[in-house]
Length: 346
Ligand code: PEP
Ligand code: MN
Image 1 (cartoon, rainbow, N blue to C red):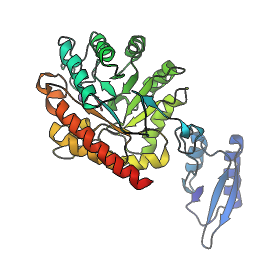
Image 2: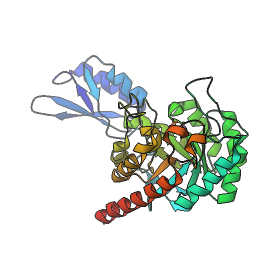
Image 3: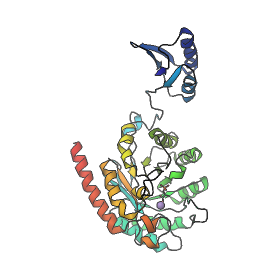
Image 4: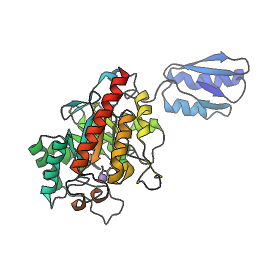
């Protein structure tokens, strides 16, 4: 829909608009109002170059698109019936829980392995753990490929599928060769289109999943959903959207908690939404409330940092990992809330 900044386009202006639209297979129809006219684009209006050319005209205020630019992620897409499966769960049919340490310490494999058993015992369906870490400070621990065999051993012993972050093509290849079930795209790489594309190409035709964190500086919903479209349009629809807080943070929290984005995402996309309350609030004591809020807002699951000895972990664990006892409580309370929510829907 073309909204001009004049009450009606002149014949010359209408011709200019028509000539811009024609090569894209679109035409224009005038909708006459009492005081002003607006102009409907007839045809596929998703071409960004076409829209930019129209918006660049001095007599056009803006173009409002009716069609969504994310064709496959859209709630009306043919993929809307697709169900992402992980850890024996069809996401959306019952709450899904992924838990584990922030970072897998290759020098202390037992900490991860025992934590994996503990999160399974607490009710988790998948194990998370960072092998390679995106650290703000280049002098902080950066991760170690040797941690991957620890994570995979924990997976073998518990039967839990694993989620781990990859930041480049080499890590992607190593993770896939090792049999990682879910690749995490971290908040810092959520807008790294080259990486999203590489992941999309590498997992096409596989049953690998992607946990796509929301970029900490992402503003529009469309930016988040379009990042998922980058992966899905290359052939694998197993993408999970993961809000994890944004910047600037809310004073006292690590980030600005954003679980309230869940219903907005669900109105636009069919993709499952698994919220990460740990990075959102950044402190173990606040995680249970954030987890409940996420489920209240309609999240399909939670990804929570958990460690049997948070103080012994590296990365975020000393501050924000919950204990397995707390995880168990979170799972039980959020399950109860889920049941109330879903009973109310019926
Ligand atoms: C993590 O999951 O440990 C992590 C670094 O996440 P994020 O990219 O959301 O900060
Ligand atoms: Mn972390």
